[in-house]
Image 1: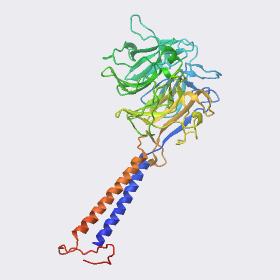
Image 2 (image 1 turned 180 degrees about the vertical axis):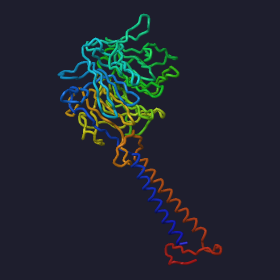
Image 3 (image 1 turned 30 degrees about the vertical axis):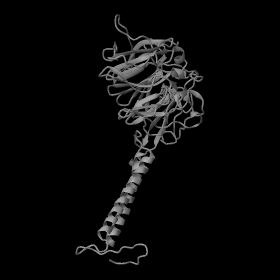
Image 4 (image 1 turned 60 degrees about the vertical axis):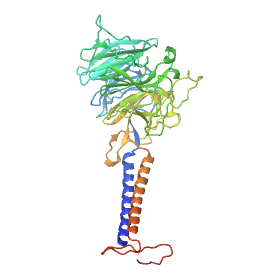
Length: 496
């Protein structure tokens, strides 16, 4: 029986060590560190574009914000216009250049604009969409003469030229606007709201069939729709169109980017049912509630926010970075007419769970970036606070480009730095793969380890007590049953 006890103790120790090692491995495998990598561009503000010439074969876009973009299904990105810098500029202006980025190779191509009549006018805040390997379209925007536009242009990807799509008489057509919410889904461009030349917020809903280039005004099955707004953040997940925040205040408030004119509501439009559904938040100013980092909670909320960079991950979850809004700033009556703050928060909305997760922010003084070594991911890297940047997802890696914010020296300006964001999977050895952070707090892993040890301890005590009861003094023992010795306080090895 002594051998049985020793064997039980040995098994207990071995099982405990195994579970501890498994819990440690589980923590190391799942509690990965989110990491940014600075890929290209400058860490100084207001940089001009690089255009291939006799001495340089590299192309790279200059600093800019309010650029419209469209991402093809293979991860290639088209961006047009914006406000910023092209070649040999000393001041930021509205742009009309078209850039194409091949994500797999990291190579940019540029189709410069200019004053030609066969190209769109310089503009920012336009809507865009396209059909893979066929054409790219833009609609509206805000001109360099401070005027909302209503023209529609098509860029033929094969022929590399622009064509203006003329309006036909007696056909429906959306009025001029800029900063409309827009989505690109299944050969259709959808636009909602925006603002006109004098800053009035709109709430009409349109779709453009990219094959026929005809417009249709959408009438929803219910009158439950988002409030008038512009500068909202959008995502497309299958046949659902998501919209968050933006400016919904009066003309003066929205035009001045004041806190009072901002919202924090999340909506989804179902293409199948042709109806809107409000998910969270309100169209009133709200302070952000971060909660614990990487921990989902029904109490979490990004708060009032506009002009954040947005993308979706491979599981259909919604992500956004930065933007302008409230953050932790607690508004009061005398502060509502202050300007919104530039932010650097990373937010994820898990669609299936209807919950927000905060994945951290830039903690550097004045929100300046920590660039690190170019091309090398590190948990110490972080982009600066910024708004109106471009973002997209490719093979589980998020990409972030430009915007308006702080450079490395803390100076405000237009940016052109390119970043990637993800989680380093250390289980793959030297190769670096990226995936989105799906984390649990450290306390969960610690609790799991403690629970396993306690269960094993209870099993050990149960087995020991059970054997002792079966072999008490005076109790009849079957033939072949082993003798054992019990030691109690004051006993000297009394054998039964």
